[in-house]
Image (tube, rainbow over all chains, first blue to last red; front, top):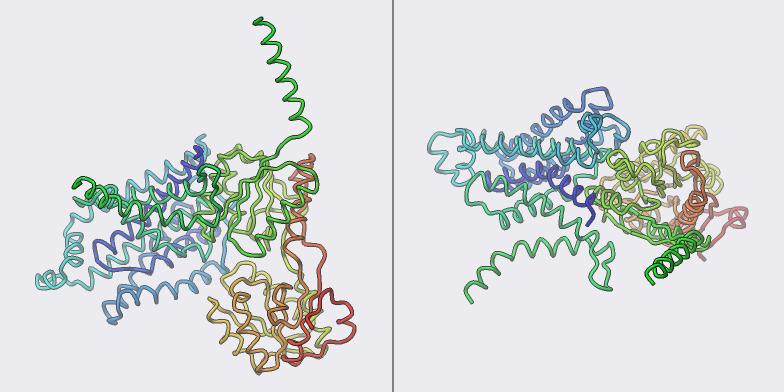
Length: 295
Length: 322
């Protein structure tokens, strides 16, 4: 793997890592399987791209993207809590609606950001080559989100969120309104996903309505791989594991892209299979280790 | 003795560089968005064309499996391969490769050719089709929608209402339907649009056109073409002849299509690549559009869908399904 491919995997792992933190929040903390993310990632991209092309500062456009993502998540939360729709279905409904909404926002399925100033340009103008600028910026942002999330989870609201996911009856009996907690939690999660979407669009040079396909798969795989490799013994460790998992997932893809074993070369169509196999290996490694120790 | 070996080495090195000068092996890195008969044909056409021109080329072929994040990672992997040329097949891959130029400045020196991109200007790849300016050019598969409409009107001279089925989420379809709208306006034809979000919607969307449209047209839309059989069924039931923009849809049940071959599209891209290897400046190489259209007809489908194909059209056809 070349340096560029490695830096590329790191960059993708970090920027998608912000999305994975959102998935971690709903999937592990709130115990709420949320498929809204397949729609809120392109939503963030769409809002950020449209704001930038209409003259807004690229950094401010990310706040707008987060706001839109928060609202999208709240809709899923409201459908679930106030209308009593099953969480999985509620999130599928929001995701489906977002497809049309995203096309409305962009006025078409794709908005190009090639040749437009993005959050990365100030760094590049300062003399940092782009292939270092994006992983550095995304590392700083992912780090900031990790710290903020750990801090948040120790606040009263964060603890209420943890308790809502663990034992909803118990926390309700203590007078906490779990509906509010769920609506806020799913909103916060999708705000992070939309932030990732906005950054991804600025990084790859286009927002596209189809860019969210498979977000939840990548998100869940990253959360699980991260937990397996890095562990989840404490809350801060579990949060960091989400980012680590995201990086491992993207490095696995980069490896699969350039894999050659002896005279046997993989064809490009084997990529999905190889990625799946690498995830399976990560998942089974701890169990294998345990069994080997017993022998 | 020592001096002799040094001389030998020097002589050998001179020989090697001399051979390299007249038989250079070029490295071409390919970023293809998805595996798909048309896009695979583009790659085959490119490779065959460069071989016919006598270039020795080593290919690094990557396929993003329709995933934009992967297309982006491929672009970065290509930056590490330091090829002599990058070929990007389909719009998302082309955008990913164009963006990498900004991040890895050494890639600005490497020509980037795109292929199978419908709207290179709308996608932000080039500012000017005639003089791309940057180190990016290529071949566009923009279909001549106005000529398609002319073909339909040649078969159905009394056409006043045309239906179109497409996915509003596909950038190429949106552009094409916009062009169709203008072409219809110019000819005094009312256009009825039915939009789908996924393949499963195609049946119902086509049904919604029954009673309103006299004929149905499908642009080069990946979603709808995947569900072509359900359109054929509705069109037979309602005697609305179905017309397509790609010739591959004709044996599947479209009455007629005036389209092009993606293999030839790839060959055209290969010809452009050859000129660039020969020293042409990419910045001054205009974006090309597909040449050479072919007309395919399906007579049993015409009978089933109630279309009368005039003798004059039949005489022009390049291929007829009897």
